[in-house]
Image (cartoon, rainbow, N blue to C red):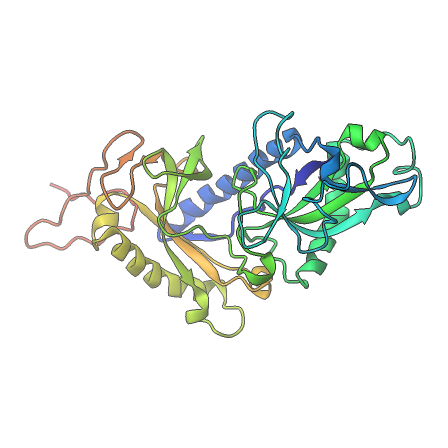
Amino acid sequence: MSEIETEPPTSEKSRRTLSATTARRALAMVAVGAVLAAGATVFLADGFSTPEKITTHTTASGPATDGPVSASSFGAADPGTCLQWTPTDDPETDRQDLAEVPCSDPHRFEVARDIDMSVYPGVEFGPGSPYPGSIRFSELRDEHCTAAVDNYVGAKFDPSGRFGVGLMFPSQAGWTKGERTLRCGVQMPSNTGALMEMTGSILDQDQSKVWPTGTCIGISQNVPADPVDCSAPHAYEVASVINLTQQFPGGHPSEGDQDAYLEKTCTDAVNGYLGSDTALRDKTLTLFWDTIDVPSWLAGSRQVTCSVGKELDSGGFATIVGTAKGDILINGAAPVPPPSAPDGRALPTPLPGAAPITTGG
């Protein structure tokens, strides 16, 4: 029997916006909220409950399969094995169809290493030892699985990327029967910590934390949640994915150099996505983008997103309904375009999302 422990999503990568100071503070709060939400998911998540589905190590006989030999869908879970299951809200049925699948198919876990804790010295993992509990398993994930994943990907794991470190561990019933295997691997947690399907091995992918163009990210209490249809309430919409290799083929570019490049590149991309050079202003939306830090660059991440949303002065995002390419509602009301410049006078162009410019009488 086994349960699963996933690493909470790390703080969102640094985002930049043309109305920089306010949005940066808002997005910092967004990242903290996402991590807290994921933490709740981690410790409440239930796990596997069919013993024949996992290869385990017992203190009695060393490596062994606790269950029928015919239950080969989980196999030996060698590094590189990809696992899939159907999640449900019922802990009695969740993950009961756990199976090994080709990594080219959708899956929720890629195995990095199995660790037999029964061979560790001391009494913590010995026969009859008390069940560690989810907090201790979280510590064991950090102690063992982070290094296991780093070794698996060749020290090229992006700590701020779209993949997270995961752990499968025995359930309490399995522990009582002597199961002592920790299974370390890679998962793709959403903003709220839910495990999403991934396709392809992490070894063959850019790990950049990007969503496809046109993806709308849901909203919960002004904080980004998980992808939703753009007709549903959401925080922001991805308008473009930019590969920084096109501009920076060499070493890591400074944050300032990335900002200078992305300000124009994202503006052009978003204008093309929205179909007008004035749509962003007319819809009172804010343009923002990601940058890539040194650890992510060294891991091979090169992609960033250009997105549109509506920042709140109090922090976080307004609620948008509808794709930004069409008619939208912001907090339940249609956006009011700022006034045009009077005849014979030129008004400075406001920053996207800024308050409308007014003129004196």
